[in-house]
View 1 (cartoon, rainbow, N blue to C red):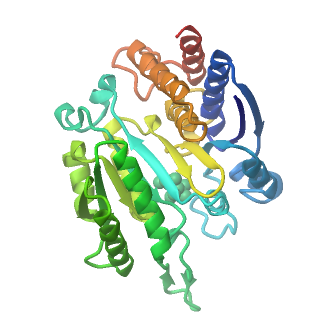
View 2: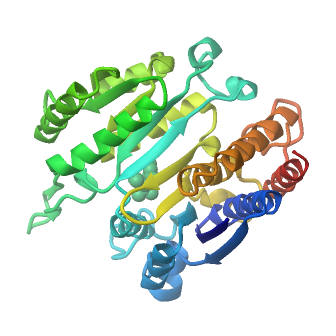
View 3: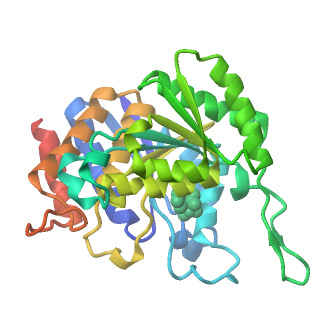
Length: 357
Ligand code: IPM
Ligand code: MN
């Protein structure tokens, strides 16, 4: 099979971890006889510096012309805490989500027995936790207008807006996922307070009615935040709006023991984007110490979702499990008293494992 992918390494540790993911993708393609056709493009702070836009048109065209996008991370301290700078790297991410129509962000939360001790939660709480957060990604407060300041600058406002259609497509997706998993959907909202949440709940209840074989739970987001780390095993598929999903998925990362482990897929109208959920981690940039496993697991999701290559996806995941078992891992997840490996060393080992599987 021929695979055409766009690679957007981005800022900070993005290039290092994406490089490892790309090496893994190449190794899998060699192994299975696929032809890989890839091209790299700029995004984020680097793109602002180079051409003045965090998501240049050329980058967008490449994404549209590809079957999948491997994305690193964007963000730079140069633009943080600087409310006066007109263009910020994060706007590139939002522009990409909107222009590619990436309305669903899928973040699977999984655990690895060797990393139980890295989580601040007790092993008996997190053991076998395995659920998927489906976050709506192109609506809500992130995109609602009006947004801004009052004329005298003393007040600011954002708008949270959702249409029936936006809610319907994402909730339907959650039921699709649940039907291939453990048949349980948890709808997270704040329907006791917010009008948008009441519409979410109304739509979700209608859809739930069409799926008697699937159990549906409704939780207010504050309660969900508590239950998520109190009894993570109770969840199978969580579906929620943009801002709630942003917050809950960072919280859920605690279950895995390291933000450096969690992949994501953003899917929608055009090309899907695969990206680690950690950010650009500028402090570690260029040091060859960042954990590449979230980026590699994102590549596994790419084989699965964009190419329906399940065997390839499973092999990538198995190679990650193997390096964790062997202890060939970066400093964030290394066992006490063991040596930490560099990002590139983990990459080399992953490729060896794939070649020998
Ligand atoms: C994420 C990130 C982004 C978001 C930022 C960088 C704009 O936190 O992908 O979760 O808030 O969506
Ligand atoms: Mn986030």
